[in-house]
Length: 261
Image: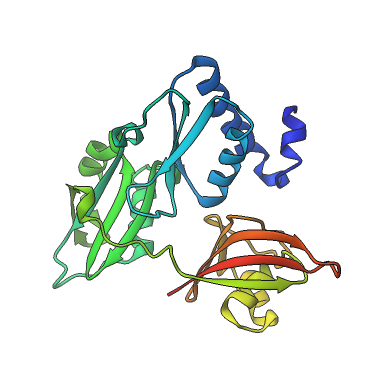
């Protein structure tokens, strides 16, 4: 199956990533060695897994530092290879600050990381619990981050590498909800996921309150698919867990994972 034929199985805007992912798979196959990706969102991992499944002697394993991380790195490797945790080059950092006197916010930390020069795919999940913040990041970038980012706003911070057993719990589990819907549209998924009127879901989307795979999308009729990560401000996140086809009346059967704020 050629490149154009493969892309027909995915959305047009995903064509560039399909090319990148196929390049990683080809590299692992042609050089017969492990190849490591950047951090990938759930939809990107689904695409990569689909491409790997077409190769008889190539496998892929994902890891993001945290258990069930939303954002994970992929290791694509020949079937002879025994995967080790160090292969993923992921370090967990805890953000140290005067939590008794200061407050950090998710958006402020993400903004500071980007402003420091990091690309979004170079770091993974940012987890919060009990005044503690932890970050998964590509190991080679740790020294750079420690040097370049010493404040977030007016708050002085330091980064401390921590072992995996000290990771905070991830919130990706959520609840599974089986749906029967008329179309795989963004506004329909948001409305059904959080039991709000479709008009309200449409307004949230058009006001830039909804992101799909980390990108703000303002099109209520946007077609979504399996493993898309939908973030709705003030509500939480939705992940399309499985799509089980259509009924005789053209209704879509799917399972939606709902993660509430």
